[in-house]
Image 1 (cartoon, rainbow, N blue to C red):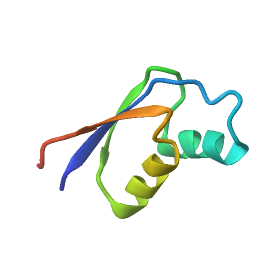
Image 2: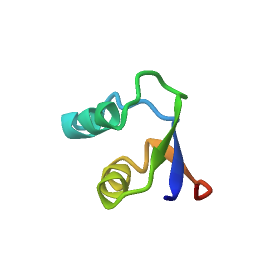
Image 3: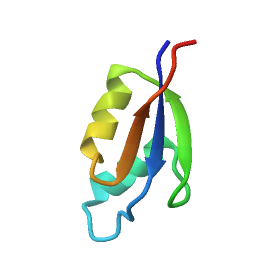
Length: 62
């Protein structure tokens, strides 16, 4: 399955609460943290919602 590397690069202060909640649901705890997560349609939707706060890199398939 394909993997995505997502890095939280911009603070969610000043944005809607649902965007802050989405950052938390993705698993982020700190700014500039990177996560490697399986690429699923649900994850793509969450990332699309906060695309202005995160950096996305396509990973390799396992």
